[in-house]
Amino acid sequence: TLECSGNLGHVLASSGPIAAADKYCRQAYEGFLALESSKSGKDSNLSQKSRQSEVVAGQSGRSTGISAKNPDAEAAVQAAFNLSIVRGVDGKFSEASSLGQQVVRWRQEQLGAMHPSTLNAMLSHATVLRHLHQYREAEEIYDYVLCVKERNLGPEHEEVRSVLVAMALCKKEA
Image 1 (spheres, rainbow, N blue to C red):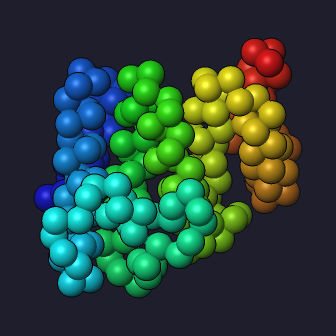
Image 2: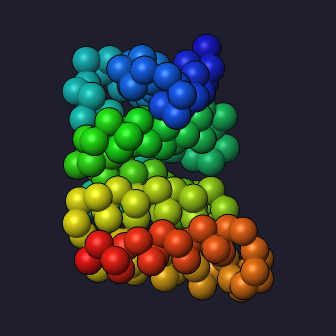
């Protein structure tokens, strides 16, 4: 299935050949895009870029047209998230940033700004921004996530420490 393909790509990103990881993540993501287009009755010849902006929120911040009630919606966003991670691991930070920003927006719209999945997407996006030398933007995201995680998990929690380490790296590189 498409979800399995995306999960396999995500696993390969950390342990296998990056080209295979990219292939499986891209296959899942594009499959979900095509599925969403067919379900919404749209022309199947839509460009990938326009379909992508319909599945997850685009740079303009407009609504995605996907409801959280759609069972494929989260799988499509997870596929985009996995692909953004693979693109980042492969050093394709601009592509990773674009996908990551869209995933963050969708998750904020559908799950809320303090949901754990939203916070994880924000952390991933901040890391990509750091690699793009956009330190101020990355630091702002780290600060927000740190505040939420400290409040919800306590200052000694492992996830809080991880954000502190990422912030320290960002400040050191800036």
